[in-house]
Image (cartoon, rainbow, N blue to C red; front, side, top):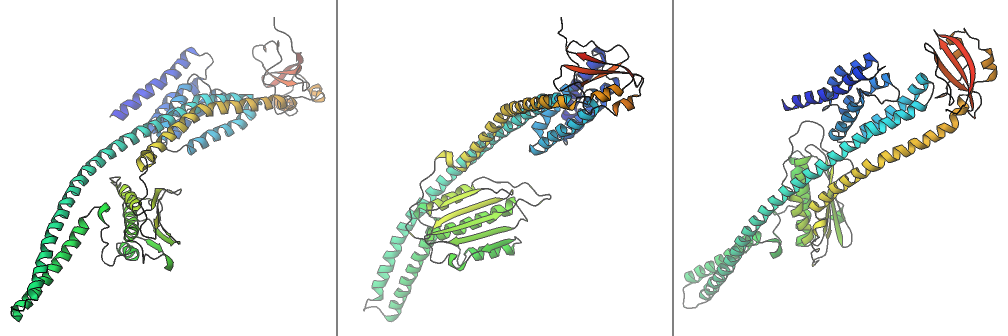
Length: 511
């Protein structure tokens, strides 16, 4: 209901200009102007789904009224739909192709209909100021809205991360309690094992009692080892590396992903196997592949994933790439935004570096470089401006600044190019509009217009020499150059499709 009301208000606002043209603009074509009411209604209806179609609809009747494209009836509509196209279209290329097509199509139209190219320059000027400039403003408005939306998303992510930090603090405290429990119980179990060992060696006990003491010592040792394993899993990253699943390397991880239906390709030369890697490096390698496969299954279901592992003298590199999500209905993935942050921390603690971001083909790439020698210190923490959140916000700001520069620079560039083209055309057109003296002498008043036009140049002068009086009522006159200097011109006036008069007119200063 709100969209329908908005469309109705927009249509009524745009219909004011053609209504004014019908009442107050003398000589305005009634048919082309009156067609604005149904055409603008159609344009308003399709503005959301097909914004370029809505923009093109007012162009045709505008050209029917004047080749300059600037009309009282349709100029507000062109500006409004140009702005809406900039706001609603995510990509600029279709609109640029549309503008280029309009400019290219208007050149032969003005040349054939008007027998001169000068209206084309007026068309380009109107197109630039009345259509392209509002479109650029709409593009900037869209980009600014995306920046605001990105800011709110980052704020929500920071709130989630703050909750995660609080949860990690509680878990860290629980881990400390578990560590204290390990220390106390481990000490007690060690004492039990020690006393049981002493009883096992006591000569005054019977063989059965010494065997029972030996079993007690072995049980205390086994309990101590199991306690160490359990507490080791609960330790934080800075207290030691958690254990990998038993017997699970990257090949086994890839096999499990294939068994679940994912298309995964593993490229791992023999010298790039994970054998002999430090514990932190091995676990980071496993986590990079695991998290990348999880993200690919979540964000691009059905896409083929490529895992590539290479190994050099002191460094191992793993790269996981997948193309864009295949076309088709799929639920929008829900992401907490913390997976890559945790993965980056895991790689950093192993002494490596992580890179993750969109690929040129629309997919995603995760790449990590990890040390193959033990004892590598963690990479220092990066500043806030180099985090994923900072990079995302900086990219959004850069896009807004670029759109603003385009909004300011493109109209000036178009105007400069238009001035250059007009200068070149001003130098060349005088030679294209010269009528040969012999052809002029063969023309006689009363000749049919078709016969006269057969000997005329294709292009005519855009305007008569200064001081030339206007043609009499009921006659239409065209002018052709006597020589390229433009000081004089041949005036040919037609009435009822026949040549009525011909004469030579010259520049005369106006008083």
